Structure formats: C-alpha cells, structure tokens
Image (cartoon, rainbow, N blue to C red):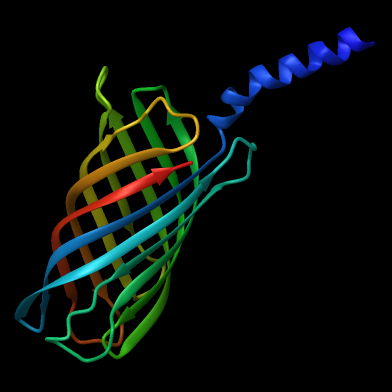
Length: 203
C-alpha cells in the first residue's frame, strides 16, 4: 500500500510541469505614442493600454482575456475616450512554432460624448523564431453586428528573458497599433495609430 501511495505521489509530481504548460495567467502593460485623426484634424498623445488573460486545459471552455485601451486626446474634447474588450477565445493551433487563437469579443467603446456596446470577432497569432527567445505577434479585433463599429489591430515583436522558467516569464514587446471608432451617432470616425512598447509577465 505504501509503495502504491509513493508511486502515485511520484507520478503526480512528474506531471506538474506538464500541467503548468496548460494553466497560465498573462498580464501586460503598454505605453504608446499615438496620432489621432478626427474631423480632418490630427494631434499626438501618449496613452496606456493593458490586458490580463487566463488560459487553461479544460476542453470546450474558452480562455478569457480582458483588454483596455486609453484613446484619450484632450486636443479634441475634455471627455475621455477608450475601449474595453471582454474576449472569449480558443487556442486553435499550437505546434511550438505557430500559435493561433480565434474567438468572440464584447467591446465597450467610449468615444467623445458617445458610447456603444459592440459584439466583434477576435483573432491572434504568434510565430516563434527557432532557437531564439523571440516571437512575432499579431492581434485583430474587428467586425460588428450593428451600425456601431470599432477596430483594433496590432503587430509586433516580443523577447522573453527567461523562457525556461516554470514560475515566471518576463517579456518585452514593441510594435505598431491601429485603432478606429466609428459610432453610429457621431459624424466622423475617430482614427488612432502609433508605436507602442511594453512588458508582459506570464505565471
């Protein structure tokens, strides 16, 4: 009986690192320099965005990601502008070289003096560079089932400092992001684009 208990304990211990590969929390914070165009006028601003994601191994239950983007530029209005995304997604592919996620998004969009709730589509991908702790990434949130519309698309590169750690991975990332808000009751589309840089932790 003691041998059986010991064998079970050893087997459970050996399986923990493998299980850790299927459970994870990702959190990131980006700083961006944006140019906003509205009403044939444009101006630059510095903004913050961030996200938290939880991924697991349970079949049929989607992974969860919450993302926030500050789009405020007080050159146009004293009110704030932002998008908050609640994302449910599935990992469609992960072969060690390429990762692909697809899902659905509930977006809370806050334009200047106007707001909207939008159901959208989600897609994200990573391509890892073999032998190097670096990967390219892309993410798109877009589409709408109403007259209100929003777009968020980004592409970039990330470098992980400690990819072999089973406790905490830290990565720096940089890229280019394009965002749009085209709300039904506003006369003009709000367009934002610019470079961003940030950090991501995975534990």
